[in-house]
Length: 88
Image (cartoon, rainbow, N blue to C red; front, side):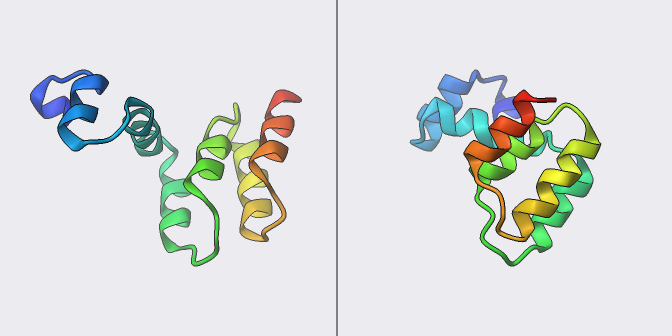
């Protein structure tokens, strides 16, 4: 929608009735590595979109894979993911 219309995130947010932050986060989800998006789509557990975004911010795919494995087990919080990313 944003690309098709040449809109800013603010314009897209207004059109959808969402916050600009929400639009920005959804855009970030589309830029996650394909393997991570596919795993998330097929995972039936309770990994939140917020945690998925934190995992996607890891600098290396190796760290992303480590964080994703812990998240799937229910052994990772957003705060823990941030600490691990900060130590990269």
